[in-house]
Length: 358
Image (cartoon, rainbow, N blue to C red; front, side, top):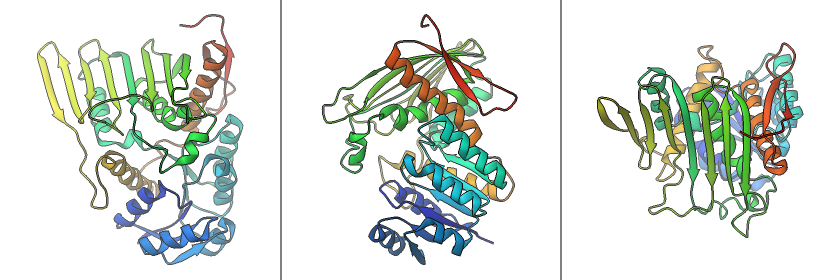
């Protein structure tokens, strides 16, 4: 029996979602919704989806879907997530950035908990094949206990031609790529005890920051660097690859351009090809992202079947959001931050300023 779903938001990146759902035999999109009716009609025609709506509330009331995939920009996330939860969806998927404020994120988590819905954030970097392979080797203990990591995303690829609104976003790169990288650094290295950040605005056509570097100390004592730039020349262009290096007491793992994974140990060097295949509906250089979308959506089907818990859940992604917000504050004030959990629940996180940086 197929899981019935609906998708809200038929913009540029939604094509990856639509292709992914169409390729999964266990899922069926029964309707799409966009405030721009023409966009919704084009998506429905292209992907064979039977019904089109311009009002999400009407669609949810009439379709009563098992899952809702929200692929809109961040200002609409809270009302749409709360609406989908009230409508009885079993799983609600929200594109990142999850929220612009911690309060909005907490409200969405609370809405899902009250409705008994599973809230999962479309955080696809951790679902990329190359990063899955990296995590497997780390978890297998191949480099021992990690004490340093670096996650890096630097490119000059023109993302603005297909998504021009990004150039006008006041808070840009940390909320765009930075959230992915902060999710990865938590996923691989554990929770963060202290964070500092510096940003740059390099491209004159871009309103917000298009480069940032963040230094983090984890609760384990490990140190990580997270950095990204949309104003870095690299030949050949490696977009949209994430590079990584993790050092442990027994070896080092490196994820290099061209999806090359290297393992350095006292016994020598091994190299592995971890490039994902190109989906039947995909193309290079987007195949790494496209393959991860399909993997993420397969995970959603497992959640619906009761075989898995959301990775990441809304609760978990609140901690990633908190790091992004702290990075902005650190860049503005020049002061580092310590995450301080409050109360008995896992969701509430604040930041207190400290006098010195790391």
